Length: 86
Length: 142
Image 1 (spheres, helix red, strand yellow):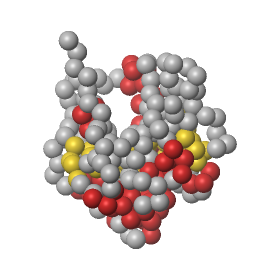
Image 2: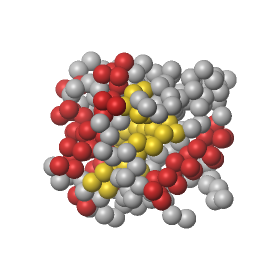
Image 3: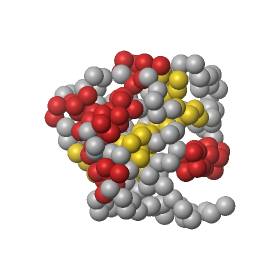
């Protein structure tokens, strides 16, 4: 079976982990709707995308997200949690 | 049809140099061209369709139809969920080789998980595999 290399940028790492992404970047504290950063923050957006693409060339642990902090993003947000049943 | 174990991580190695690689974006953030039909947010089961977005698109011609996240910021700068201009800048800097011939937007909300997983996801993978010449894909959500 042929596959396509992918890398996910997620702001909901716990939720995304349920789908076991082969490579994933979690920009810590970014809110939903801000996967690459805030509007107009092109330098930050470029850095996030560079970091995500770089995961393709590194030895990552498949199924786990790499967390990177970007202080220039500003106010941080708590990611959504997976609701446990029972 | 190949079926993967639920515990399997479908890892595909990447053995190229980024500076010689073509990259596609696939977003679940509900991004589409303004002159394409919007996603059906009236159906509470969700929308299983997707939209093709060309690599030379003017990002001001993109919009978001999605009712399960606040896309106010994406309305202002679509690059926060669909980094097409950012990707072009990385190409001009030589960080990547180029943009794929096809990028994809869909609405990543559905109550029809089986149809999304076995239908839409495979269709998108085929679009990328056969039609985009992408060496790798960046996935984003809302």
